[in-house]
Image (cartoon, rainbow, N blue to C red):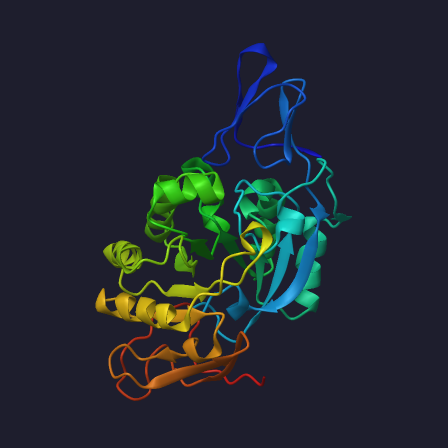
Length: 339
């Protein structure tokens, strides 16, 4: 348990949490929407500090991040809890708390960094659940990681407050933000949240110099209309045409087990829409054939990926070897990785 950052005292012993955009007002003895921040006698505490519920070594492509250190390994870490209630959550066993039980092994920030280094990772990914809700844990880890030469990644729903994002931004190298829909109604009904903070944070992350990639899980009957996909693509294009957009295939999960897989044709249409909108890099997530990188200038195949791994990278010094066009990203230099 650790005293929380970003909260203010209110009348009657209540506190207002200003970590995420819910800005919960929490009475004594109660917790916020995330289930892991509790008001104890007028002081807000994080209940998950140092309690790792999941940790693994992953290919960075699994996050998904395709233009940030391609072919590298990242050390993934998470605690229980989440500030969203997504009906299709893939990690609901740890994100959606049951009976308010806080589980996780004791694992200090120093342990995370040491384990990442010994595993030959080049970065630490705060992922699986929502990293905002274990902010203090991630923040302390990120500071140590940066000193040791490791990069820091947030795989996030984008619901963090501006003040919290700005505070951690000097230590945050890249984010993949889920843009689940362009409908506020979708966010309210499916995620118990709102759209605007997500849009604002995609824009803010880019303006802060953080490398940004965006993911949209295309769910049949929920957010898969061509009009909405076009609106998402145009929003991303309005920030920068080089921001990679991952349109991912939905698989039935959690409370949406009755919804079918995303038709391949709809993903192909989404990719076409993205390219017609002017986006340079559009990927079909959860499908090998849609994960390769092509030069946006000459169209030549540059990076071959399969099963979330980079098999071959032809990029040289950040450029296409065929036409010398710049391929945007971070540390995109030539590197061959064995499967």
